[in-house]
Amino acid sequence: MSDKEAHESQISTANAAAETFLGHWLGLPREGLMPHLHSYLDNPQPSLQPHVAIVDVSFKGHFNARLVGTERVALYNRNMTNTNPIQEAFSDEA
Image (cartoon, helix red, strand yellow):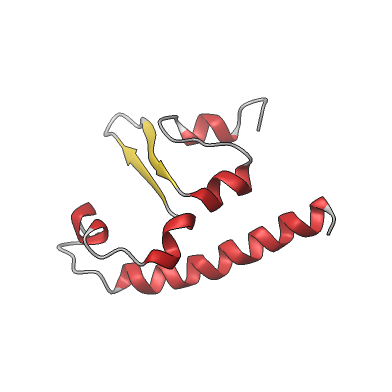
């Protein structure tokens, strides 16, 4: 399998996981628009965990990747845990 085919396979897998995640996310109990983090963490779906990224967003617009699943690491070819994923995505090394 070529690098391009491998990357396309990873993207396809990630897209399927995103659809599954959305169904799971929409089923979580919530108050307002979004469920609390504990609602997600208390009900994890193991098959989704490698695809998950949890990013803290401050009111000042700062982003910090709290958790980056192993499939995200493989897709981006680096672990962005404890970094600003927006800056990382647009860095020269991306």
